[in-house]
Length: 470
Image 1 (cartoon, helix red, strand yellow):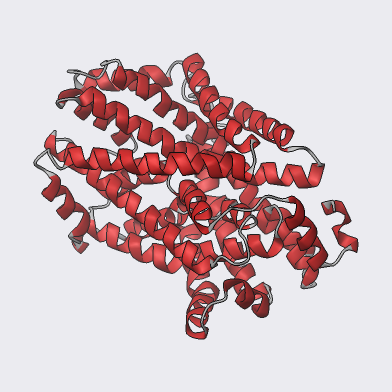
Image 2 (cartoon, helix red, strand yellow):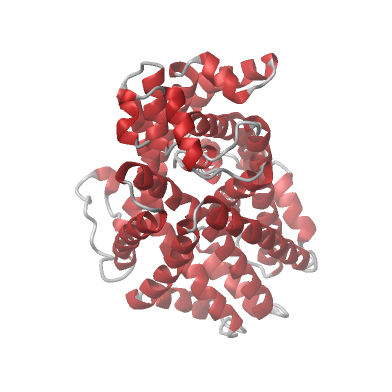
């Protein structure tokens, strides 16, 4: 059955037709690995350590954990249940649910906002993923050994100033993503994450093991886990809330897309909790891997976005066996970025298959090439177009290049907007009976989730949305 015919078919027929032709995850573990692969990305390995450093450590981590539980987890469950209930791409799942419950068709825009956000994020995320690919060779070749901070900074600056080199690594990273997505759910996504995720955990534990030998592991643990609320600001609280939202791949339609492949006999609540716990664990392990190295080398934990590509390479260049551990670290970073990149491309590919009748390979190639081409604008904004600020006349966007605009627009507008609409749709618009049926929770647990997603979660996400705009 094509999606274009769904207007003349019943909702149950649409579900049956969809699930008869679409792939499903082979097991709960497969979904957990895929969803965790999506959630565990550059946000955990690259962003979490530096924003923790910028916001004082332990108190920020505590607030972040509370935000995961009170905001991230409820929205994740909502996205997965919408995806499984609809059994299609995010846009068409919302369309079918609205059709069945006689809601306004405009609610399908909830899915469209998420798909657009993920697509735009992947265009510049692939560029950053390319940096990680480049740094594997840089670390392995010994270029970091014995270098000064200025020399390390020059290596990174040299990479950013060379559009052809950036284009090459961006192309390599996007090709890695497209190859996996083109093979479908079981042969592509499931097989890839079953290799990449265990590999990522092993590499992360190796780097943590090394960090334990630096003599600063205890100091790093205290920095991460001993709250000092005098260092926590209102801005830090909202950053923690925003990152809790971002790190679980919420507002990008990813969990809706992955949820559409989830068999009916698998608990949405249990799997969402497992994914949230693993994702948070990886972020904390990344902190335990990075901060001992930072402290042991007298570096600054609040070094900002340059922590991974400038501060840590300096440390790797000074430590024994630094080339080996630097290479392992950047391979770890590639694995994290790769699994997330796969999930960001999947929703638009799924939609093209349904809406345009394209086969998997063609839809992946088409979406991937458009995303790759958009990424070129981000590459040029780092060098040749560094003075080009398309919306510079608007105060909010003053001084922002194309790369900055894509980052700002997705993280501060599309993701919170998408998450807010998901919470409202699941908590206020969808049939309560349908939601209860999909979640299959005990009465007290359902009441807790339902109350949270109806009242607390929308207010919290709206606060982040308004704060970011102002």
